[in-house]
Image (tube, rainbow, N blue to C red):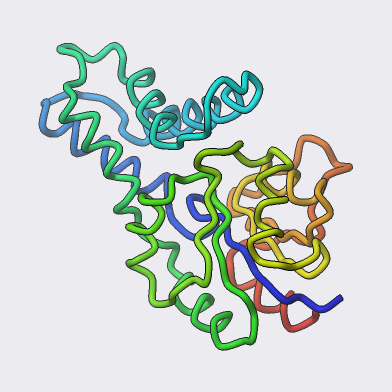
Length: 228
């Protein structure tokens, strides 16, 4: 079937989350006069935020909230700071996720995708209000902002099922642009045509769930659409 809709992961495929989190941590360290490696702390923060998502899915004790995951990851990663993080500092770290910069090619690629007769949406683990604030900085308007908030985080199958229901398409009619290996595997396992923007030249842990396509940046998505 021809592609009718395209969904984009947000925090990895569209935005430079590592760079934005490094900047936020560097600002915190500068204010405190703290000597540390902001980049290393940012990587650890992102890792713990993702770990929170996976644990939350497994335990299934409460609806998905990425804001809680972001805050928990920050508090864990910076737990040895003296004095401890203040609530204002935690709030500033959370807000940093709404001020991320897009990858350099994002504006051009999204503008080109928007010109095509396709449904354009996000499919993200981010909370809805945070996503809308972040996406407002982009030069296109998405038809749907699909969030895992209140349900289960990707790569749980329900996240992809909800996207299909919202968009009114079949798995083979959707191209999902994943920014993380887990997302690429989850969408592929659900039968969705998937492209992984693999900026770090990583690999999926389970080759059976390798996505149909891997590209170095978002420009590769246009070639895939041209061939569909």
